[in-house]
Length: 305
Image (cartoon, rainbow, N blue to C red; front, side):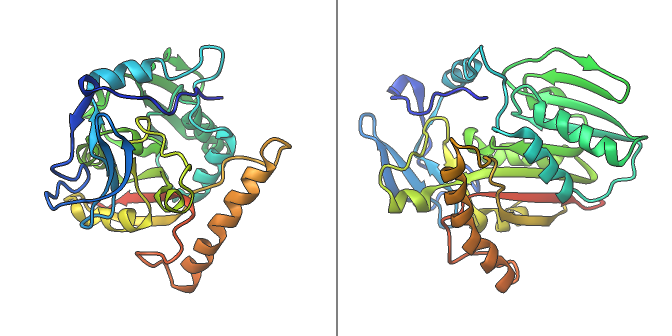
């Protein structure tokens, strides 16, 4: 499965002050401190009243993050970013609208070894046997290029290498919360969408749980942001790209009901159920009364320009 570092004590040389403006909406309005993450140096968890995002007041430097993520995966394990990629891939395939193109270009951003994108392509190929797939993985951890009868796979270290391309499907599963310069990142991802292309995003949203349970982990510096429905349901209006929201809902519970994980899965499903009911009863509200769902997913589609 995945690697396993979560909490790390950072020094001033590892940090950049990010308290003056919101990393998502760039607002310079004062943000409210919610928690103290670290005392020396002081790092706080801040809430932006403008875009509804939570972010750290001090961000890890680029050098720190590059070192951190190049050693992110245990060498004895697969480089995957979700425990059951087949389950998540099937879920995403059900959310995606039909696409009649004979070749689909998929960008897997921060996808570890690209397993999620590869499995998704296999599932979509079953539905459309004549469709070919071109997968580009962007991740610190580089993977070997590969090719078979319907799929080509290529790996790049950053989005800069693909800035002149357009993609039909972009996957950003459990990655936005890791990137300090979030506003710029979202702009890059939106710009990479082809006409009618779709962007799937999944992020944790645990601050409400942390408020109730003091020891609930924020996982800093692995996670430098926390964003839920109030943020995602507003975000498209902050960018010039013509975007529409196809799906906005509590994220999939990726864990199954094995002996080791059945309790965790039961709790996760139970916490998400009130939000799913509220979504139906209130017809997709922008803000939810029940915010203990633990994570959110959203599917954007780019309109024809």
